[in-house]
Amino acid sequence: MGKSKKVGLALGGGAALGASHIGVLRYLEENNYEVTHIAGTSVGALVGGAYACGVSIGEMIRFARRARWTSLTRPSIPRLGLFTNERLRDQVRRLVDDKRFDETNVPFAAIACSLISGQEIVIHEGSLVDAILASCAIPGLFEPFDTGEDLLCDGGVVNQVPDDVVWGMGAGRVIAVDLISNVTGNERPDNLFGVFYKSLNILMKRTMCYRPDTEVIYPDTTGFLTTDLKNYRTLISIGYHAAQETLSK
Image 1 (cartoon, rainbow, N blue to C red):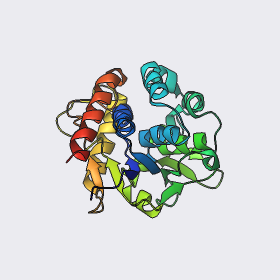
Image 2 (tube, helix red, strand yellow):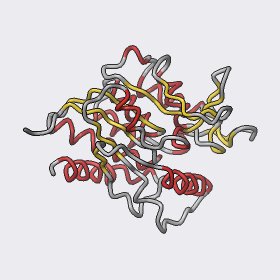
Image 3 (cartoon, helix red, strand yellow):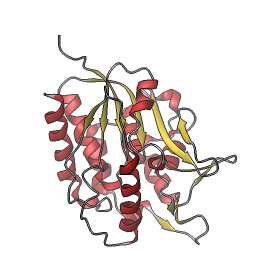
């Protein structure tokens, strides 16, 4: 008896490498998989949240094609981060509108970290835009998301690929997509973003672990920078073929 094609997805962080998630989703659609649950961290929350509320693969590709750091960031007077979330908020809203968690087609959760308690925060209610911004708020670069009671930052600090969350949501089969295990090699950061991302990726790689029954897709992102948004087409193809190789075994 073959494996069930009803799957929950855990989509990991990785900034520009997140285009690989689009390729994975395309493979799943073309091969008649049914996505039952999604949890995402950082760019995984962006792609996962969009997919959960019905954004098509084509729309995601157009979003990736338009993406530029100048359209996603705006310098701030440094207090809690070098950049405000205003431009990123505008772009995320263009993708998911003003949808809320109870309006998604697929149950979804976004992972953030509390800068006050240090605990993992699993967001599964309220505004999708707010949740995605919180999950993407890279410490030191973007201002943390202020809920009024807490300050939230990038979920990769505590749970880079949240397969455990997807299991806890009730999925019967979980597929995780790990974007950074192949990255923290000899890539040389070439700007401030790169230094932040590379440092975080090194730390996160050392703490990552998966449940034994989680199937993990590792797109071959070796040599790609997490800050380079120009390679989205290649990364989509890499994600597609990684999914094909892993899931056809």
